[in-house]
Image (tube, rainbow, N blue to C red):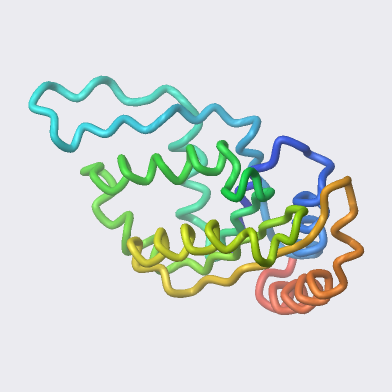
Length: 186
């Protein structure tokens, strides 16, 4: 059993990474750095009459396979201008194509069987100002029939500042214990 974390931060040593490392400690997991991945923008041809261009030549399919093979998906993003990072948004936008891909007829039902953990870290009162992003994720999950999800919202701007958010750290510790019971690393 595997946990896949889609890490959507431009800082590899920032607060989002601190939380991910604590959350996934001693679990069977993989972290995919979306900021370093090559994911092209979505091509939406739902209403086109012409031929669909050749498929993307990027990392999306490889990353998606890892997601589909996992039981738990962690979506990690800093709170960027009250939304998710561009790299995470690009990945989720591409679900549009996956929903219409004949080779992925079960995409929506497979995704709906996963458990999702959304990790959001930001400054400037993130428990309040992340609400639009939380709602955005809820609408995404609703559309995808995903019912098993939770949110971890942390406060931090400077690297490792999130460690001072005692409520967040307590939730991370509890969730890590639960994940370790199911997803022990070898």
